[in-house]
Amino acid sequence: MRQWMCNPKILCRKHLLGEHVEHHMMEENIRNNKKIDGYIKNNLMDPSMVESRHNELGREMIVRGFTHKSGLQVKNKTESHPIDKEAALQELLKRCPECRQRYDWLKKANMI
Image (cartoon, rainbow, N blue to C red; front, side, top):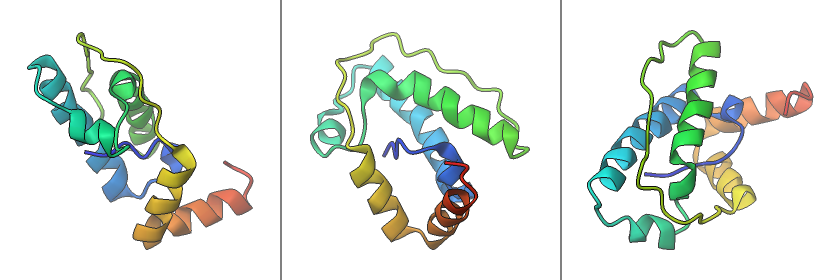
């Protein structure tokens, strides 16, 4: 599970849909009071952002023509643990050539 916390327009199809489904898995973990300390400790997710980030990803899915009908309701929200967004973005761009290409194009077009 990882929240990239970048503008969803940057995410390639694989990362957009992958992060979306991981939010559903995290919702289940939070609802069932499973430990998520490792995700927080490793700066991979902010549990207080699961619901809002999911909604943000869902809006981008719809823009791209995907179906998005799943909502989240994370009732057992924990404290905020802000993710270093710039570090996460740089990691994403380093790992994924398609996200890098989307980022460069969006940046050049002044869309991000």
